[in-house]
Length: 402
Image (cartoon, rainbow, N blue to C red; front, side, top):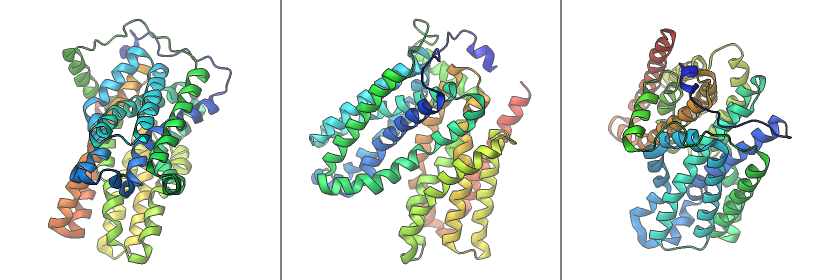
C-alpha cells in the first residue's frame, strides 16, 4: 500500500550533500528544539509574560494554547504541503517565519498583535515539526534511522529543559522580550543553516494533492483510514492525553520537599529511556510493539498505587515507561511508511493528534481528579493506556490483512 501511494510521487528530495548524515540529523533536531521553544518561551516564564499584559485576564492563556489549536486544525494539511512543495522548502519557510514572529514579539506589541503573532507562529511550528522528521527519516541510513527518530522524539522535553535552565535566567536578566529576541536569532540562524547545508527539494510541479477543500478532506479521510499512516498518530493521541497533564497534575500529590526534584526528573527520565532503551529494543521488536509495551508497562506501574508504592517512585517509573511510547511512536513512522509522502502525512497526523491530546488532556483529567480523587484519576489514565493498546492491536491486524 505504501509503495502504491508513493508511485505517483516524484520524490521530495534528492539526497546529495557533502556532509555525512549525522550532522544533518543533528541540525534538523536543533530545528525541532527551535519549534519546541515556541511553546517553552511562553510556558516556562509565563508569570513574566503575564506581567506584559496585566489587563488581558484569562485571555493570557491563549498566548500558549493558540498554537495547539492551529495544530489540531491544520496538522494534516502541513503533511500535504510537504508533499506538494518539499520538506526543505517548507522547513526553511517555517524557521524564517518563526524568527520574524519572535523578533516582532520582542518589540512587546499590544495584546491583540501578540496573539496574532502567536497564531502565525502556530503555522511556523507545524511546518517545522512535520518537515524536519520527514527529512530525518530520509537522510538517516537504515542502521541509524531508529536512533535518529528516537533522538527527534526528545526535542520537546530537551527544549523545555534548556529554556528552564538557560532561558529563564536569561529572561530574568534581559527581560522576557530579550528571550524572544534570542529565540528569533536562533531560528534565523537555523533557517540559514538548513538552506545552505541541505540539498534542494525535487518536487514535481503542483505535487499530487489539490489544495481545494474537498481534496484536502479526501486526503484526511484517506490518511486516517490507512493503518500505516494513522498508526503512529493513533497511539500518540493517548500518550499526549496524559503526558503534559500529568506533569501539571501530579506534583501537588507529592511531598512538598520532593516536588521540584521529581518534576525535574520525570521528563528527563523519559528522554533517557527514549535514547538509551528504545533503539536497542527496536532491533528486536517492531516499533508498534514497543509502543504497546510502553502503554502496558505504564498501566502496570500505575496499578502500584493500590499496592502502596510511594507516589514519587510511581511518578519516575511512569515517565520511564512512557519514554518507550515516546521514542517508538516516531520510529514507527518510517518503519510503517516507505514513501516520503506517506511519512509526511503520518507526521502531519501525529502533530494533529498530539495537539488534540495536549489540548484536551489537562482539563479532562482535572475534572476527573475533582470528581473521583487520585484513585479515579489514575484509573482513568490506565484506561487511556489500555485503549491505546487496543487501537494499535486493531491497526496491526488490519496491516496483516493487507
